[in-house]
Length: 177
Length: 177
Image (cartoon, rainbow over all chains, first blue to last red; front, side, top):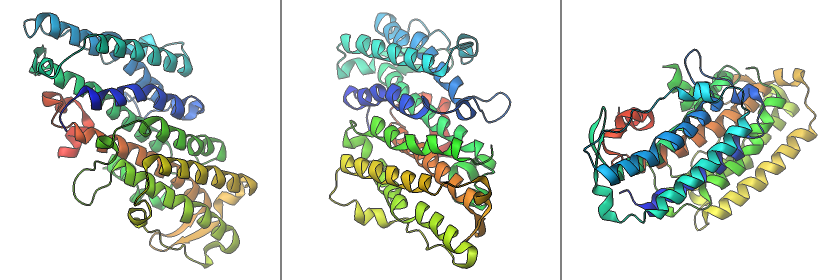
């Protein structure tokens, strides 16, 4: 599928509600557990999504529109949330994420982008030449990637509890390899 | 984490709301797309979850409680939903799944299972000896596994649209290997 705002926006709009429906009533034994040292819990992942709303997607969109590929993006800090989330509750993070996402989608819609704009070039500090459509498609897949990760991290907590069924659960058998 | 109803029930309760928040407003270009021949779309996956509510989890629970491992489970038909879902809308399937899940959790709670019950043995037609706790833990991980799959299937639709970013998205780069 090619990138379009018509397909991207419904996913970007749904993610905060998905996270809330999924995580807001779960005990911390699910939401604070990770897959081992230096891996992320669902709590950490929501913090990471917040940091993306604050510093990544819309800032890079506006940089492309203002400067094209003449200025590289500011590198994204993948670990900033470990500090920023400290002392907060998961429900605080879920609310913050929902507010920031809604505000960013208003910023995006206010730009009234046309299909031609999605070819406008930008420069990624490591990947090199990219374009606006690729950036916005990545915003969508980044959400989906972390939803998939949350499922995997929680499933991992029951990896032993399922006994012989692990063999039938690709999420567990793949993670074991 | 060991299996317990206290950890399992909140996940089992949340899945219908997660699916609704995620899928009910998405265009069919997301919900009806799969990963290629003989793979499942989000629509197919919701149908598969419905079939599990109808024929798998609680029927096997009751079989274990009534007959232990003296009778093997009825094999689960992983493709039944391809017929059963035909002609239905995704929102009809989401409603059906939510109703069946709620009814099954009422059946489960009415059993007033105690930790000792989770060791009661059952017999899987292929995996052999299992127990009730493993069956119920598998119900949880099966939900999570299919939520992860839905994310992956939808992400796959934008695999080309993200351009060079595919390298940073484990969901896409893993699927390519």
